[in-house]
Image 1 (tube, rainbow, N blue to C red):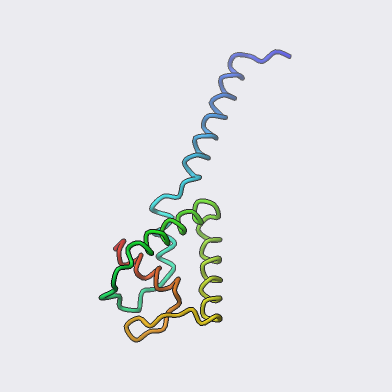
Image 2: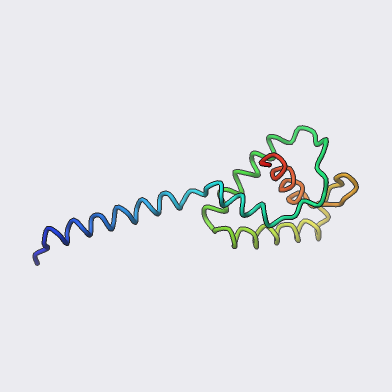
Length: 115
């Protein structure tokens, strides 16, 4: 079986471009997290929150990992399920007179920090 030089070059370029796309798309970019955060309204005023930088950076890494592996739509569904489970298990927090789940709290702080 003979492969022409042109077919060999085009197949190599095709494979290289596919690999490059896969590598770039495998890592979530800032537009994905901005799109994710845009799905959560910030009607709760966020002010005077103490020492949450470590928790928020870990949460942001977790969200970026979820975005890279599952995509924006599936990540939103998964996070909404986590929030629902937190309300059912009463894993909530009082924030400026509002009752929010731990995940909602972290989303609000992350959204405030990125604004």
